[in-house]
Image (cartoon, rainbow, N blue to C red; front, side, top):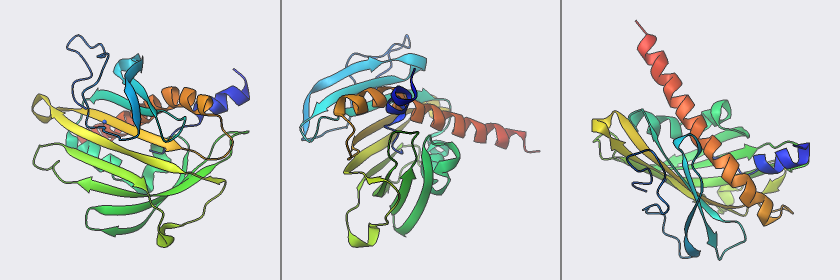
Length: 233
């Protein structure tokens, strides 16, 4: 693989969820049942990958040539533990691919404004954005959790970074407890428009590879925390 193609495949990390997408035999359903409702969507979800028990789906969008993408997996960790890791925005550079910087600009109740800088290999230009993240309570009661975001465009959030500003960045994490809370079904939905001159087909190709890495990074992070907690005397 050339450096250019590797960079294209690497591109679409956001930075960065459904119901039963995994069948009882561990295979992925052809169509997920999800709350990822979009007025700009065209057609049905299409299964594009099911490696490592991570089901990845895409569907077309009227907003741009970049497809919406949905990933679903079961992680052996509590909903509360997963929500804690996902909400730890300042530490994203420690475990999320290509997130070079992540800063919480302000908080109001369950809403946070988060600036993130993404760094990519040459020849892909870096990206940056500020998102408004809303966290719905529920993890503590065992009823699951939902963390959603969209691009923030107000003047206070215009924290300028390096490279190209992202034009669209919206999505959510959905966390649903399973097996009495011992594991969690994690659903990740995202739709972006990276701006710049990247062709849509390259971004779509990148997403099908990069989005599962986001799920893998989350799983590794929360399991590492669980192991560390278990080892404390």
